[in-house]
Each structure stands twice: as C-alpha cells, then as structure tokens.
Image (cartoon, rainbow, N blue to C red; front, side, top):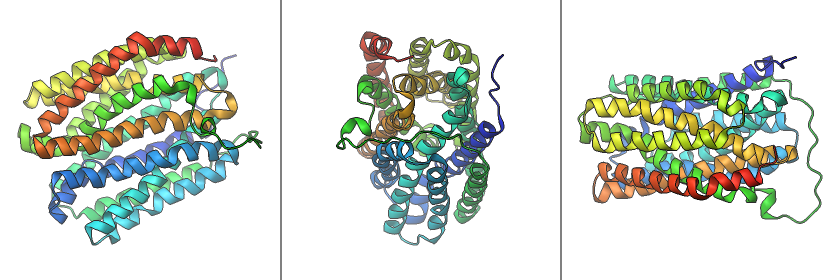
Length: 391
C-alpha cells in the first residue's frame, strides 16, 4: 500500500518552511536599495554587508548538522526558529550602518541553523519510500515564498512604505512559522553516541566533496542574480520596480520544473535531472546577460527558474543518498553549507566587480562560472555520485 506523503507533520513543516523563506525573501530584494537610500552605502559595502548574512549561515551550518544529529531534533528546531524570528526586530532598532551589519550577520547564524533543522525534520516525518519525492515538494514551499515575498516587498518599497513595516511583516511571518513547528509530533530518533575524537567528517559529508563543488558553482551565480537584481534592473536595463515580477516568474519556473521532474527524482534519476537543469540554467544566464531589454529580463527568469528547479531538489537528494540514516543532519548541512559558500562568495565578488566595472560584467562572470561547473559535472561528478551512493 502506498504510504501517505502529505501527512499532518509534513504539511506543518512545509508551512513553517514557507513562512521562514517568505520572511527571508521579503527582505532580500529591498535590502540593497534600503542600504543605498537610507545609509548612502556604496556598491562594494552593500556587497560586504549582505554577504555577511550568508557567510555567517555558512559558518554555522556544519555545527548545525552535528547538533541536529546529536540532540533531540524538535527542541533544537524550536530554539533555532525562535532565534531566526527574534532577529527581525533588530532591523527595526538598528539606527546605524554598523549596527545593521552586526544584526544582519547574527541573523545569518540563526538562518543557517534553522534551515538545517527544519529540512532534517521534514526528512524525518516523510515516509521512507517517498523521501526523494518529498524533498522535491518541500522545496516548492521555498519557491512559493520566492514568488510572493519579493513581489510584496518591492510593491511596498516602490510605494514608499516605511521599511519598518516590511521588517514587521517578516517578524509576524516568522512567529507564525514557529507556531507551525511547535505543532509537529517528531518521530523518536536515535541520537549519535560517539565518543571518538572530533573530526571533520562529523561535521561535513567528506565523501561528497565533488558534489559540494558543483553546488558552489551554481549558488555563486545565483547569489549574484538574486542580490543585485533590483539595482541592475533599474540602473542598467531601465526597469523600475521590476524585480518583484522577475522573482514571481523565477518561482513559476522553479515550481514547474520541480513538479515535472518529480518522477525522475522518484525514480532516482538524479544525475539526469541535475545535468538537464545545468544546461537550462546556462541558457537562462546567457539570455539574462546578453538580451538586455524587458523581454530578455523577464523571459530569462522563467528559464533560470526551470534550471534551478530541476537541479536543487536533486542535489539535496544526492547528499541524502550518500549518507547513512543517522547522518541526515550532516548531509543536509553539507548541501546547505555548499550553497551558502557559493552564495556568499558570489555576493562579495559580484559587488566588487560591479563597483569596478558594472553589474552586467558581474552577470557575465556568473554565466562563465556555470559553464565551468557543468563541464566538471559531466566529466567527473556524475560518475563519482553513481560510484558512492548508498541507495
């Protein structure tokens, strides 16, 4: 008899994940504009401040995976989610650029921990026979947040609504997400009783190093795309207030790709999914970088969404399939750490390139990095996964 995928606990975790990322995406497109308009911040400084969030998340993730695997998961999840929730109040109180930068980086620590804990809880409440499929649908909640959050954010910001209102909406969304997770009945899991000396493989899935590198390549490009989109659209393409629609189209592409590729994921055709997504992503970045008008701007959003929508759930399933069951937290944190590392480097280097040349050159760089990553995947990483997967 086919096991039920959409059980009550899984729905609650997905709802919490949607609200988590809704709160996150509500701030993402408006923060560069907010920093520029409120603190007269230059491009490179904006990149440094915003990359602090991602770098902080990156640094905490390996420890987050270890903690999730070593202690009862629900208490860990609720503590992490509460920390993520409460930091939104800090943005309202930050009156100086330095204080804002400190709060933003500290918030990244909470974000890094809660995303590991929440995704691991989702895997725990999924029936084992439908785990790969469930990972894909879990990611749809991220994409729905991506569709709604930036659109609302930019609508409010473009209509001169005080930024504190946007920060407050994020605070409320995170509070509701915390309540959703509080309702989850977590299955009992054996925790790690490991008295061996601390070593790297207890924090990072070391056998997945080539797969980590692939995620870094494509998250590097995504970091540049998502962070500087609003400014690029206004300054270099001539589109005012167009980032909300761009993110909505991107999310439509992401969700569509996840749904259409779900059967491939279910049948463990993960490398086929990833390879296809890589090719589509490269096409999307090429359109975005070279087709510099309204049509190219918005059409590339759909294509890029389809590419990342095919890749991301399959990449996460790859890490889960290379880890033993008692290391799910480590596998999740390794995937997310790789994503954050690429994202943070992309934001930092993208800002530096834009300051010295232009945002257009930053997106050309993102396209080139994706091409290099795809070549490496087809020539080495796909076969490496097939040799090392456990199931």
